[in-house]
Length: 245
Ligand SMILES: Cc1cc2nc3c(=O)[nH]c(=O)nc-3n(C[C@H](O)[C@H](O)[C@H](O)COP(=O)(O)O)c2cc1C
Image (tube, rainbow, N blue to C red; front, side, top):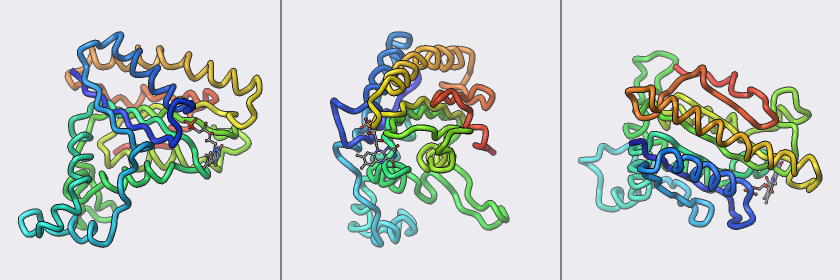
């Protein structure tokens, strides 16, 4: 049975549009897959600590040579990586802050993307020395932004450093299948925003249907199929730029 890891990154709670999308996704998923486990990690309310010099030194020290202090420095990272390891489907709900990801989400990424845990590094691989340890995971990004036009062809298409960044680092989370649904126009609070909210919520059941069908047709928990990528922020296909190896 697939395990879902839900990461909530908004600093807001009940007013958060991205969290509301997450609630909808999880309830649609559990309606179709009632036995599945959902791991909740609320980094918006409890942000992981930023990594430090001590953290980096500890991460690059072989486990058997780590001091007690070094082991402690990696304790949060160990817990977050253990959650990631168990997950087949990662649901990230996140706002856009300053055209990128909230610092809490960046802190989570920095804690989980760790040498010899989630990626290996080998100069023998030439110009591409990093390889992910995990594979076959699916990621669903549920986003909210105050402005609009971040999709391909939109008036701010070059200003989105949230979805492209998440897609780039997701390789080292073991993600091989990625989807995005986003709400825009929050700051305008007009009809376009209302339509964007409705469209995003309406897109969720179809995505859950597709992922559930892929799961049922696969020997793996959740199928990684590049051809099945979707992006429903303004119904564009920004993920075409995301390449997997
Ligand atoms: C600190 C901060 C920075 C923001 N920066 C941006 C931004 O760069 N671009 C944008 O479109 N919206 C920006 N917004 C608006 C949020 O993305 C928008 O309010 C969104 O709905 C927040 O997500 P949430 O509803 O899940 O909390 C910002 C909001 C805050 C609080």
